[in-house]
Amino acid sequence: SLKEKLAAVNDGPSTLERVTVASPASGSGSAVLPRELQNDLMSRWEGRRKNSLRAERTGDRVVLAELLRRNLDVITSFDGSDNIDGVDDALYPASAHSRYVNVLAGRLFSSSRETRSTLTSTSTLLTDSREANTAERSLKPLRFVVISDTHGYEQSLTAEGAPLPWDITSTAKGDEGEAAVTELLDDKVLPHGDVLLHLGDFAVDASSTKKRDALVKFDKFLSKQPHATKIVVRGNHDPFTVAFPYSNATYVNTPREMNINGWKLSIVPYLTHRRYKVPPCDLLATHIPPKAILDRCESGALAGCSYLRSSVEKMAEKPPMLWVCGHIHEARGSKWTRFGGTGTPETLVVNAANANPGIACALIHGPVIAELNGSSDEHGSAFVTDEAPAHTDRFDWDLGRSFLDVEVPEGVGQLLLAVDLGLRMGAAMFNEQGKVIRYEQFHFDCADDLHEHIPVLFENWEEEANKVTDTEKEIERWSLTHVAIEGGDVTLLDAWRSAVETDDYAALPRGGRGARLHTVRPEEWRADLLTKKERTSGRKAKEAARLIARQVVGDYGFAEHEGKFKTDVAEAVTLGFHMSRRLGWMQSNVRRASNGMVLTPK
Image (cartoon, rainbow, N blue to C red):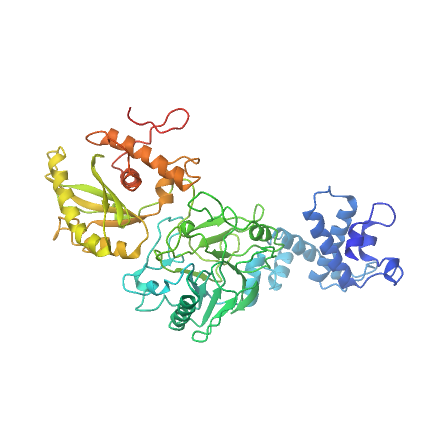
């Protein structure tokens, strides 16, 4: 058996003989094994050797050399005979050896015109194995519309005021702003594409009756979508068996390989054992993200799967071009990652979760649109052509032109309102001179109550800003131009959007009408202002926010804060400080002691 051969000691027959010759215990004497079995055993020997911790031995090198020689036989169409004495040199042309070396190096080059012509005639040898596979399969572009973690709220993806799609095929590479494209949004359906891919957690956590009703609604929602192929991956909240009679969607509850128009897909649902070897593929779709990549929870813990990541890192062939996942709502984003060694093409990992951070109560992100195509970059890879926002612990993101570039009438000063969203809400106002104008804690009975009070808040706070601020000669009055909101409740967000719905700032310059609204994830301002230790848990982050807010009010407000700082309003002040820095209104950092503690007024 292979196990016996791999456990063989150094004495006796050579390593090559022990791998390629049947042992006497097998009942066939010392007969030479069939050539195909020999090749398989040598490949597996090399694989085991590479993954072991023992030092490489001479016998290992002999086995590898023989394996490479036989691969050369295949490339040169040689018959495999070990006896090459007297064989015509034409059977082993120099160009064939050159070609084989180039294949191993992942590129083609030649030193003579003869070699170049020989290589040109060999159409199956291209500059990279990915490009070769793409060319041989004559692949057409395949467009995916990806959603994940909808938790029963899928209808809001196509309802009026739905979050706009994120088209990662049209966003310039390196641009970290999430491009929302309105032209891809149609009435009551998701953006068009070849494949609709749901990466899991579509079910609701409720009674059995409500779960069944929600599944029927989800199936009917899928049936309305225009995609020819619909795939649903099981998540950790989903039942193991689900039928989709209305949409005929394919439900993947165990690891599965699929081939769509020549593109290889490997799909891994939520697994309790998680020990699954991912086969080579063009696109890898999993519910859980890879370990330490787009998997950071609000607590700071990394909830990705180490087995999946290890499996991709150990792939004998090139890693997948695109890896889409979900599961961790607050980690939505994308990141280019090199899973292999130097020279291995990078994989674009995309977390496509649609739900708000933490326990899902709304969908705050639109679908992700990706496309696999036959074009190749410098690595010969055929994957989505452009990059999407990267989620990272360091503060490195862009607000986008729509929020930064606000044109206001001459003589108007700009005001920013930062809001910690909720019925129990904190709000803080800053001006473009870096002053804290006002901050306050609110409590509303319902969304309608909030909707009624937003215009009043706008008017009253603008009026106060014009009273308390030392207006410079060139500024005749102050008006609210920016609203930054942390929180994902769709109903409450709609209330704020409707309050600033007009873009005609000149026509309605007061009361916040025409102000630019921007939603902010807590991870963004925490990455900017908090230390790594303070980001390890939600409790520590809130404690740090209260200290930072006290410092900001003491440094930039009209008076020091007295008494306890409530968390909601403290986070609003901290968010406002963060956004003022991004707008260029303030350049200072959080002042800290030598031990890292936030300095606050005595």
